[in-house]
Amino acid sequence: MIVWPWADASRHLPATPDDGKRGIMLLYNPATGRRNGTTHSFFATLSASAPGTRPRPEGRGHKHSSVAINYHFKGSGRSVVDGQVFHWEAGDLMLSAPSWSEHAHYPGADGHAILTVQDHPQQIGMESLIWQERMDGPILTLGSEQGQTGYVGPRQAG
Image (cartoon, rainbow, N blue to C red; front, side, top):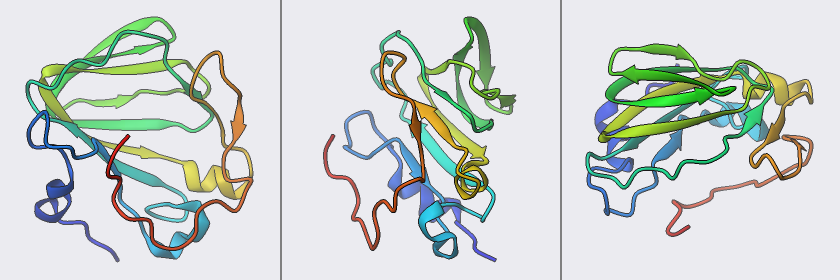
């Protein structure tokens, strides 16, 4: 069993709008190897933004074959899934990305904190995880290449 205490994990997420911390982190289990999962079947991330963070610009979303379940435990915002708008707030549980549906998420000015669980490692193992980050960009089969190995330090910019 692996535990990611909130007191430890939350230190890596933004606390103020300009603290330079990245707004998303994978709860990684080294036993999953190249599948980069939290378990061998599931991928869990914490994402957050501080109150007062500049809103994400409106635009097209992205698509993937994996399913995404989001537990919103702080803040509020909205998600657009296949053109339909869904408003969410702390305490809401949302199936936010039915397979291959275009979707985008827009946290509100009060910030947010979300636990997202997806079936990425399972799909990578079956070589079935397809992803399109930009609607005018390529469709990728994630996990079909070896990818990064070894320790990768915290992202400093970009």
